[in-house]
Structures are given as C-alpha cells and as structure tokens.
Image (cartoon, rainbow, N blue to C red):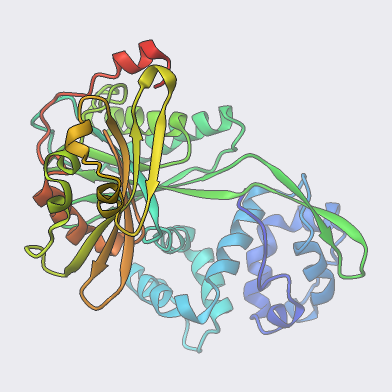
Length: 403
C-alpha cells in the first residue's frame, strides 16, 4: 500500500477532464469492491459516472481498501502531470504501446500506460528518488578481486523481490517491494521501493467534520554497486534493511549470501589527513570545479572510557582551534576523530555540505556533485581507493562500552 495523498484523482474537476472510458477501464478490476463495499453506482455508460461520489470514495480509503487499488491510484496520480508527460511518452513509444491517434491529457496518458504496462509508471516514479540528498554506508566484497557484474534475468529478479517481500512482510511493512536496476557507466544504481508500517492520521473532511486516513507510507532505498571495486553503497534507514540487502544481493547476484562484508566493514574513509596535514588537507587547487573547502564541523572523542566527545563547529575549525593554541597532530595520541563535515564551494559560488564518518559512511547534499567530491577526497587521502580486505578493529570500543 503506497502513501495515500491524492493530488488529482480526488478532485472532481480532474476526474471530469479524464477520458471516461479510460477511467472506468482503470477502475474495472476493483468494481466489486467499489460497488459492494463503497456503494458506488456503477454506470452502464462511462459518460454517466457520478464524479462527485467517485471522488469522495477515492479520497477516503480505509483498512479494507485493496492495496492494488491504492498502488494504482498512487502512481497514476503522481505522474499525471505536465512535468512527467514527455518522459512517459518516450517510455510508451519505446515499449510500443498504442496511444491512439488523439491527443492525450496527462491524466489520460498515465491511465493508458498503466493499463498497458504498469511497470513503466513504477520505473519512472522510482527514478525521481535517485537524485535526492542521501547518506550512504559502504560495504565491500570479501574478495579483493570482485566478480563481474551481470544484470539478473527475469527469474532471478522475481526471486530477489519475492524474498524481499517475505522480509518486509515479517517486519510489518507489507508486501509490494520492487527493485529497479539503472546501469550506469561506472556503477549500477538500484532503487528498492517498499512500504513502511501502517499509519493513521486525523483529517478534516470536506463538510467540516473530523475523520481519519489510513495508509502505508512509501519508502525508496537507494543502492549503488561499483563493479570495479566490489563496493555496495546503501542508503536505507535501518541496520536490518542494510543487512538484508547485502545478503540477498550477494546471494542472487553473486551466488553467496556472505559476498559482502557486513559485520566489521572494510574501511572506505579515514580522517587521518586532518591530523597529518592539518589545514593543508583542505587544498583543492588541483581539482577542477572546486574553489574552496573548509572544515566546518569536527567530532572528536578524547577519553573513550568516559564517553568524552567534543563537537567543534565553526566557519573554519582549524582557525578556531589555532586561536586556542591547539593542533590536531599534538592531540593524536589522546584523540580519535569520529566525524567531519566539509563545506565545499564550487566554481560559480554554489556550496554543498559533505559529511564523512569512518569507516564507511558518507553524506552528500547532491549526488550530481559526487564525482568532483570523490576526486577531492581521494586526492587528499580521505578516501581509501583500494579494497585492501582489511577492516577497522572496533574491539577496544566494544570492551569500553562506547561503540
């Protein structure tokens, strides 16, 4: 069940400008529910549909509303606009869908494509989530030389989704998980659409009364696999989700559920250059497109047994520390750097924030800038460029109770 907040198909005016025949064909699989449970007067002629009654039904889902109906309404409603029109038109033409000779409104186009191939709407909808800001955790393959990447065939793809559905259903997040693959030049992007736990919210009805809405929010997790290094970068909310992705992708794509090192991950990032190079670690003249880099936030742990964590925030943390006559290299033995946030100014003036947290976490404001950011991180030594098949030893932290 998708998150359910219709923008268009709960609007009588929008329903009226939709081709009645297409609208009723779209609703036909749910006729029994709409007629028997919601008392919709099903018209003999599509031109006679009661739009007001239909809009009231669509805007008030309940626990017995079929998930399939909610999903169908959600995707059609979200993509039935001018911004997605050209993209949907291209996909429909590429798939050979007969769109008829007449011009189609955005609503008609979305409905016609859904009736022909719902996968197109789901894929276009998924693509919208790939470019949003995210935090990624990286997990490398155990083997220093990773296996070659092969896109899964239809049977493997289905088996992967079926097993994800079993896991999400067990976690009370419903079924309906879908995996979308977007191969790029140097990486394979994967988007996993799944549900979250059921929510119920109070609403104000059109007549001024009080009501409630019952829905399952939608979530997109983003995974990026780099074949050259065997790295799987995961953007997901929970440890359980990240673990199941590592295990199932390892199993179905590479034949080994333990293919990716999930426990004690191999380090991808280090903050040692801040200690070794100091302010010089912010140098960026050799990176095309980057004008300035400043360290704007630094998390440091001094006495592990006391959980003594210091957080410094400043326009330039190095300058702030220098005014207190402090140097990071002089505190090397008593200090461990936990997290650093960099303010990167690109040529042209725009700024982005990048956060690094060893051994394997990175947060970016915009994925479109990651190429330049990665070049800078690697050049200054913040990013470990090879899979060394080694991992950070957290045992001392665990023994001290601060991991």
